[in-house]
Length: 312
Image (cartoon, rainbow, N blue to C red):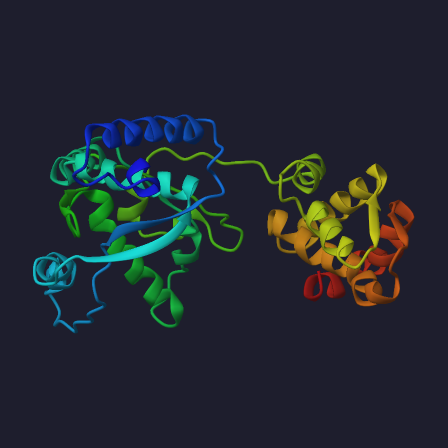
């Protein structure tokens, strides 16, 4: 980075060389102190992205797609491009370039494959979506086909990846699903047998929904509050109002399909749709979302099971 800020001198007198060295030391101190952070330098970096090449291969030739990057990597010369960036970004880029030179990628790939084979964990989410009733027609046939495709990987096989062959014999597989419509016994017996440990979780209750509404960094209440702030509308949710939203959501989940915390999305949208629509004309106003407001906006929908089923 010092060479970019102050290029090395050519042939000259000894005094010129000493002056140059003294200047470099001054620049080094300024650089460490962060006083050169607003300066721009031109950095030459290697573009490692290869041209996009699409190959249509026949069945059984998937390895051709995987190795295509390696094949063309030696054919195309490495491109270098100039970028004008500030000193902190240049320092990051140069550090990454030097670190890349020190890394033995073959050793990294070998160690990564070994760790995956010995300590890997694969999480299969929404597995209930491929569980179907016993039938020979309709979508259940394709669901069973997906299960039979997954089965060899769970049982243990060798999978071709862009980094080589990976054995799944010792990889831990964890599957999860809501199973509100189907049940675990709807999976094919072979797949059930590969998941011997079964844990059942309790449904989300009122207290859980209150925490979901308030505690996460991107909680729904914080999102809507920030969204309406852009229209200069301040929305305040009271504790009893939040508790009422959570209680209504839990009640609807019990009476209709239990979709968990997803219910909060539709309820919050229905609760605030009027304020969101009128927000441009409400600039500078404060709105308090308390238990009375929540009941006024949602009570009819909660009491009418047909409305809550299709709207909430």
